[in-house]
Image (tube, rainbow, N blue to C red; front, side, top):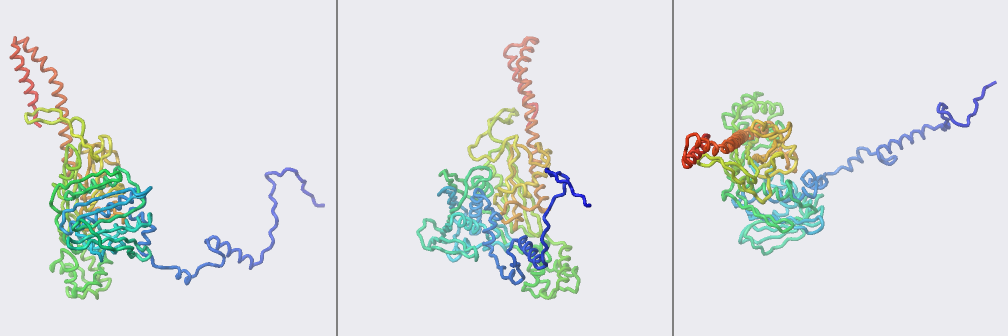
Length: 592
């Protein structure tokens, strides 16, 4: 007889759970259920999986303006505060490039006006050569349109994106077009355009074009209305313009902020930067793929002629050495367009192994030690200034030059100075009311990063300049420096890199890539200034110690005079003369 399990009113934790037996499923139903589950996992509807034909039908070309519309953070428009700064920067860069190329001393006006809640109008006007009315649409309404991308000479703009991207940002955030007014000469008409960008086709869309009366003989004015934020500080429009004035001492700059306050940065020199010339790429900077493309596209009929005409610093002798070293049956008369990949690889290897002179530096225009010094003194109050310019160097075949300037000592308070007679005395330091770059004695130093005379205010930690400043041993020059950090003290370090192609880390041009050659030159320039700073700081410390000692001894000289008077029975006149003699001996015991 079968046993039956006793029933319990309360279930036990150890009882086996009871489930209903599932109904048997046919193979066809099981297949459909699996298909539904797979389709759901892929986010689609049952029975609508794509094949190659359907996927091909969905593919289409994306215009560059459409791409940057969705990825505007790549261009520096990732926040309202940064967007305003980027717009001013791109407009001012274009103004400076145009004026210098035309040989005109630049005078630029920047006006920021608040037109609504979180909406600002940015207007930038210059006295440059102006823009032809047939080119205005493409210059301001088409991304990747410019004259500098393929030119190897120093300029602020490189990609042909900046000012068009600023207009596109204003168009996206306010829906309003860009207003441009330009005139190319006193006897020419002034043209005004209202335009926007057709982002699907990357083409300008002109809403209005007319001839207007304008009081300027030549120049350009651009107005962009956008969603933005204005505030003062180290990463503000004010700071950018101040640093621009320091890096461009030939610039006269007028700025009007949203509150109506006006600031003018006068030029400290009437000399324009030396005109740069365009050069061919240096052989040591060309990569294999680029070399193969150049061989295919050249119009030269011989390999020797190709090397001489398409590259800088290659003459007949150097060309012959390269070809002989390459082997593979190559001769000076080999036809460039018929050279195969293996032969091109041998030629590329031979180029790398051949000693070739460094590129010409006529293509770059550094600020210069004297002008950098005058720029620092004009905008910064400090106790000590020093500048240094490194010889030109090369990275990836691109010439570049490093300049370093340094301002040490915060204005205000009491300092020491040595008179012509050798006496040490206290002096009151000057105070300034303008925006102060020099920090406090217990704060990290301020670093001004400049690339082709353009200040860089963002992404400092990713920049080669900041890395080089941190890697320099400032303790040896008398400053405190935490491990892996910036030194501490009242100091500004200004670093300028001038190059035909500055290696920025992104399209927004906010940080410089850390190439070994660039880092080496940066450190050498910083160390050169650091040694002079160390001499100044050590001298200041000796001066302070000497002053303290003299002050201590000076307190007892009158008592010594009284004692000598009592011992030697001197008169009051002799006592006073003795005291004066002792004081003179004390103050002339050291020379500074």
